[in-house]
Image (cartoon, rainbow, N blue to C red; front, side, top):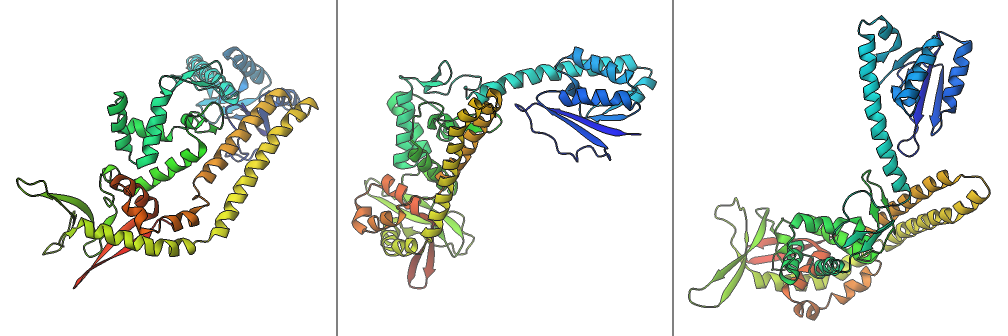
Length: 434
């Protein structure tokens, strides 16, 4: 008895399966990719070796229509081949012995018909994807659907651009959402604003349902540098309490009491019938008895500014910039190699090494690889960090900023601030993000 296996894969939808998926000791494996030449060879060889067992994942791999599948099942039965579908309840030998043989086969053919209809739809979407056409559905706000790509909506794109600029300026998602409502009467939810910030479409890229992204498919609303800064701000805000990211005070969400390990919130105290306002930092959930006392906000702010001016240049000087440059250069060279491949593909088509369809598929894969490399490159810190650290290590720089501007720069450099209580007072320990 000879055991053989056959698999068919559409290059637009799937990769070739591994040879160890069958769970049997297989004598020979036939694999088709896009065409079914191996299936024809299998049938020719079965004419000389009847009685073989044929393993297949699903019956629809035998043809592109129910009629083709039915005809090939009949041919295999006439050749005496026992067919076993590993991912369906089909065993030709057992089916022949079944009293409900026709009913079971009819149900399988109906299932095949549904699967092939789904495959045709997915294949159409895959062809559009390889041609870098926009996915089906409504275009994101700020764009409209063009002939073969997204085009800017001249009335809506300035609203989206202003939203991004507001977020980049203050680093507050809720603040940017409120800004849109006040200036343009455009009310969106915070979750919608977050989707805008992370949507590749606004960066000039097209994202598909399978998670792949193709870069530079249409006119972007924000630049690559702005997109990288947005990603850094989102990662930074993710470490904070949900509402601390948009809190008006610059130290909100950063200070923690080292003694009780509780985050500290900004408490506002006013005097009755007076306009005077006092700000304090107090622990949110202090388990101590008596509780850790509150500390004047302005004192902590002044000490934070003095500490960051003193310690930030030292922290940046201790960073391993050569290693960072090596990583950046490696990613940049990898992107250049992929772009060089793109320039070689037209020559391979002209010389007949690649057909147009294969070259188009290869172009799509190279574009997605470039997108992945660019995403890794954008997560690295800016190269001018040392010069920036020197510029912001001047006390007057911080004093000239508003609270919202100071909040932005604090969170750009500081991960957290630990308040260390002592018998005669307290001191701060700054933990930087690098």
